Image 1 (tube, rainbow, N blue to C red):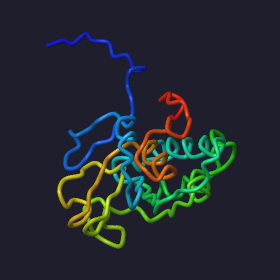
Image 2: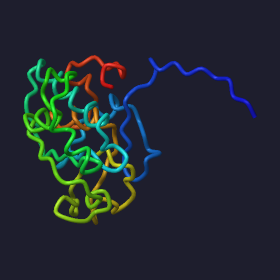
Image 3: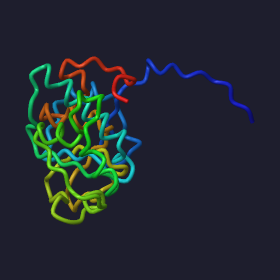
Length: 185
């Protein structure tokens, strides 16, 4: 079977997947209108913790600075996808005006942890507890996945970064940043 289709990438919008399935994805702008607050914002994991993923989030954070958004209003944690990525994000990046990705995250109030799987499957000190909510760039948000009784929402690193600054779940446009995917890669 041969497919011949065209996809207009200008129509692609940031999404947020609500509990309890990645399939529960809705436009992030729609979720922003609901003003869903959370306790923790997590960026990273095996699926969204690569250098490019973290750069995307850092570019959003840096752009937000020019709009007056300086620091995360909630707990904000970054889990690089590997030890190599953790090392690499400490180096200056010309796309960030010579700052390192790690410095951009720290300036925004984020803690940078070691690469590990714990919070994604509800283990360790960053696991959600009953009643807590997190917006994450993890890959699954099934019932109790991130901690017994916790609610996990899924989004891209860019949306998690903007949400961390906003204090509610929302895309970069909520910070006055024009969303053009090619700008953040």
